Length: 337
Image (cartoon, rainbow, N blue to C red):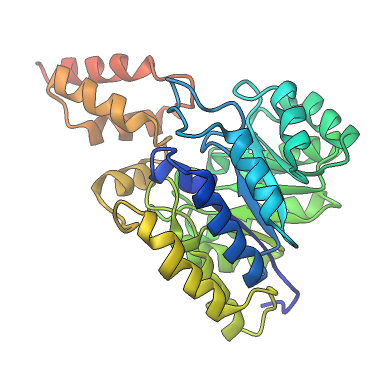
């Protein structure tokens, strides 16, 4: 495995927002940014779990306005870059400008893996604003490695400084990761990143094989705090890479203490691979489908896991939640109910 330095981007204050129902306060942000910054974490992502503009009835209301949280993070950090996530269609160029005014230095622009073309104007504005730009190809398991590489090439052409392979459902196996990183390396001139979820218990392992295949930017979350079964655990990743002789610039003892004494007390429960998260990882669908599948299952007398498996087979994507009732009805009819 290569011994080059790896840049870890910590997503505790963004992906972790899902796990605590978007209840971060300014004091939480100040404490977490301070300890991560002191530990040497180079990039700290701060925004609603669904990115800029995500605070809504549909995606969950934030307890505190995210621009206030970003501003607090920017005031607190001494060395780390403050980043935000933007999903075109949820966030707009207006929110991106506001986030820049509040102090972000990086924006991570996320699209469904097959829809990179919707991000062109957002990359354009980000470059005008002088931001470091990251392309984020979500649900990356849904395309072949070669198809994904072409979408990544589009993001590079729009101005992405880094392109990330995002295992949104935590469904990838190690070979899936290797194949996709390898395919991107063949066509890109910019660095590659990898964002894992732990729904199959593979977040650390998949992050390691991503590095082995050539990724140099890895997302992680302190204590693993994130959607589903959480993300690659920052302090564990730092420890493993240190054992392997791979430099991260993060102080192991300090990041362990940050997880133990600052982040852990905020958590409602530990990040574990429970039945719901495992179902998402096994079926490879968006975690947002779970609640709808449970409702449909109750209505039609169908195990929601069966509904999710069928949605995965049909390659359902975000925005197709109305399909869930149709699938449940079809399954019910097939069972003669």
